[in-house]
Length: 177
Length: 326
Image (cartoon, rainbow over all chains, first blue to last red):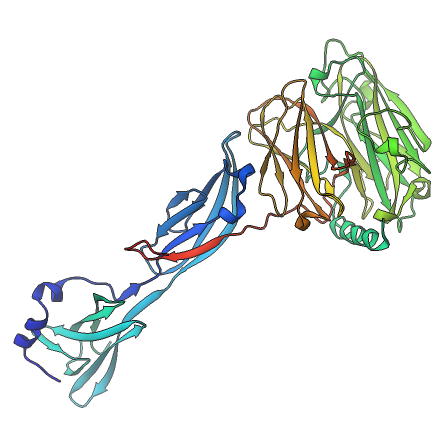
């Protein structure tokens, strides 16, 4: 369904259209590594140090950390004896997976009047999704966009409700690429 | 001991010893030398009884002659610990035959009673002698059949006693069970053990020495005893179920002791007694471990079943970034 730019502006401000959003939403990027099952009174004074695999370190029997990106991280445990200052490195390695919760994708196909585009959100707990397209000085809303010339920079902004909260993702492509 | 238990220990033993040599102290232990001081030395030098008893196990299947070789058996020159003039004599004696190990006094911590049990096969007194300084001396050849039968480990046992006879210097030495007289060539599947270990720690700060007592299935607790560590660092118990539990270190000329429960998971496994140096120094000390019956537990040079690896119990949970809920 094609609607006018005025209608679009009712739903969303220029500020949002221009604002940068990621194209992937991470859900479980924050983790708790809990070693308390491995620690007893006799070794509770050792220092437990985690290299969390993204350049950060954390200390403690239980540590919390939020990753900034999607991917797999090797969290490595070292133990330090405070009496001798001895380091026992690579005691244990845990692979932490930060998976995408919602991904915004654009698929292209060759249509009768140019490139046809379709936006799609994949993930769970998504509702009320609306897509706003912008290219050159044009704007449109809807899941699909048809008849766009090749080599145009097109951006789609997805507004949706994720786990009860209003959320935005955006993605850009060059048509025909 | 039941047949099932004998077979279990034997199978662990064979698995662990297929590839490793019989240098004592072994590479696993990261210990510099064995140490025996002269009878006139004071305990503050790090030897409580001036005697060290080691047992070598030759697999039943091995039938060729064996040699027990001693590195730097003299007391003087390189490696050894001087205390004034070199005036110390240390006697090495090799025993086999019935009672060499099975005699209860042979397995005690202190050299009392009939600890020289079995048949004396060879003996030599060493003093400050340049021709033995930094060199290997070989006892043997010994017919493996001259060792005492030890079915639990599917082999035959020879006993070597190093006794500080006179003087107050420290003899630092190593052993090797060899198939050759003039070189160290390992006896495949052999091992060595002791019930009380007198040794020199590595000198550098942060080094870790390891002792490997094997925990049999009737053990419910162990007590570690260490002498003259001078509070130089940490002593920790490491096993598949203990991740460096603190053990009590000793002061100068004193014993440190601590008791540690053994859980079912640790039975029939090797425990790693880790001695962590907190500073760079020369330090000689003594360790032994007893079970709940106050019986000494054997330290194996090559850990039976391999060095233990602690099984971490890590709970990984995802957390909500904003509201902190797990």
